[in-house]
Length: 180
Image (tube, rainbow, N blue to C red; front, top):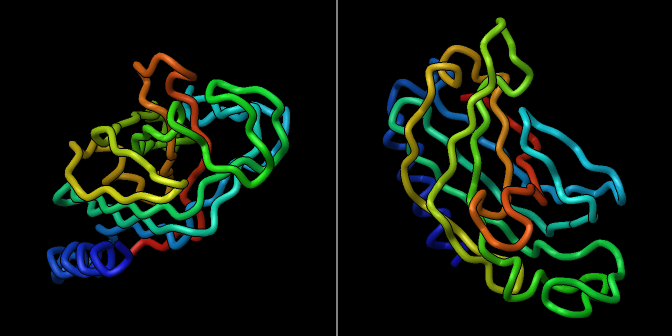
């Protein structure tokens, strides 16, 4: 799994060619869980879970020219004991279970309305985590705001917006960002 992700990531970087020097690839070297308990965060109108989550790592690479995105998430799990939940009891350190393992990656352009441009969110197609770990490789349409303000681009890992259980909430985000 990890080798497949690294191969896809290298292909993504290679496809960027000389454009990489122009700030056309955004890389997040970690996918971090939303750690605050009982606090709901808002990123451009997308809310977080009130429950805390942790990961044991991950990486996201997004090409602003081609729309290619590669996501790897490792070990997304509960950071607090929950006696009940959509999938039954959820002990600390447990993976999300069958209800909450369906995810989308969301790129948020202009996440802070930089330059007076309203935020725009674009989702990947749905993918599944198994035991908190999974990957996705694909394409998304790149809004102009991402190209104009790559430093104001965010990555969120969330449930699909039309999902019946906890629709559209994010549980993790891209951290340790580099613009190449």
